[in-house]
Length: 239
Image (cartoon, rainbow, N blue to C red; front, side, top):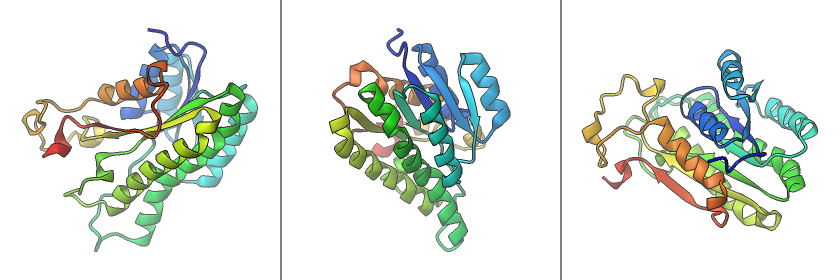
């Protein structure tokens, strides 16, 4: 289906893993995708593949992010979709974690989404509305056995940002929702000891599973969904 024909979508962290799957999914729905990523080579290759455009920036640098989104606001007649997907950071126990770990993880996972969200307001208002999806994690409401207090705190903050955006910007017809992926089979999890049987639904999550949820939330089918949090975790958080 081409339900996103004529729409302009920004995906942060869009060059690899879940982000790349989201880019492919939105492009298949005929959106024009702007890929924001630090990995310039992969971002440019993916942009060529899907007919989009790549922009290189360190999402953990709020000033660089603000400058990029100000430029996009000037270049584009409007933005319809923003997917705040960029994330990551060291997984360390509390006693091992440094202040630099904490601040860097929050900058990458939470502050980047705040800056991007503010950065699309004008462009979405010019369109008469828009859709924002924040890619959080089940770590936002579950304990991580491998550590990662900063990551979990950032993702929990992302859910709060989602709710507040949905509440404050409903008057502009801007919707904000979140997806919380569980463990997903990407390069980052290639050494994981988990097997399909560890998931109640019997299989590892694939990046395409997360991308399908994002596509739904930005589509007309979700026109009356805002402030929602959708777990896509194969049932892991039920255990």
